[in-house]
Image 1: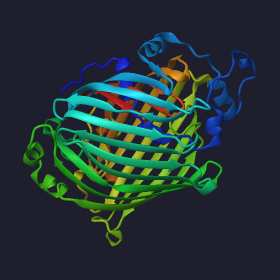
Image 2 (image 1 turned 60 degrees about the horizontal axis):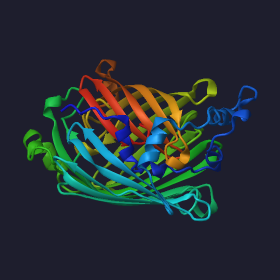
Image 3 (image 1 turned 90 degrees about the vertical axis):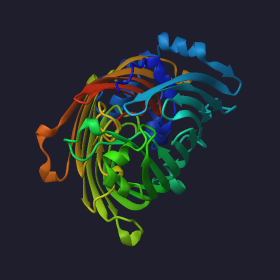
Length: 453
């Protein structure tokens, strides 16, 4: 099913802040927010990263523009903060289009005028899920800590109950700490079989249920070097999806039989991370590199024994240090060893996992390689108090493949997916994206929150 074209203005609907969970975790990030006056631009060529970042932030004064005027027209101003009733339009290869409305309600502190919390209720309709009601609440006790609560219920299949808390200064130290508890059922993914040669015609939609918790600790070692620890305990199972009942049981009876039983996953992940980017969620310059191993052991309560190794690099080049053109590059190599897992727990390549032209779960195997490159071009800026900081377009190229083992990796198996993104950047934490991609899997239109990398 080809997704319909979605205009940029409809992307505003997804101001649904999963990306708020990327709050600034360093005072240097906070000190870099806000634009400077034009007079401050008269200075010598920047030579250090800090100077480059500051120059980028001063590169142009805010502009109202058409988007700013549109937001002003639809905003309802109240004594406690603005309300913006965004329309919703979303689409993907399995569920098709969804439509609805989502008011974004910002509550301000009386003394400072800063936003202390955001409420985002919504109602949507999809032919397969039917009506879905969602409530999102984001609270910011101070400039560093935050709390997220989200609840959602569809007439068919989908539901969610989630709580998340994060602080970058655990007990007044430099340790970053996050904890999440969640019960979640999604009907979006599909299974096509294993390997890069799996057929698109074998698509079988399914639902995935997850109940569990996750705790993360990030420990600073030296300079930009960190040691990250992640512990997760969850129970998962696959069920029949909202699209074409019994489809997955007919196409993949053995795989579905194993995946449909409740399974316990208790994993621990250790990572060594180098990070000198200027922002944790909206980077414009710098490098992020990590090497990690995730392990699961039956003696610790898991139903499987396996290890997942991952090596990742992200690099951001700011052309002429002006913040108008940012070249973003991403590499990821991931592979598993040990027990064979249910298909939903194996490395996947699709629209949310590195290959935007394809549906979620399009390619599944024991390992995968992903390369992405895009040119993020800033078009305009509007005042921060109206939520939108910048508008951006980004032509991109996604390249990726999956394989059963490292020695089976073949360059001829790579899949290519060019496309273009239209984005609304809401600094300091959020970006809303509409992606249009095409390739051997046909075309795809995706609306999501956050940069792809």
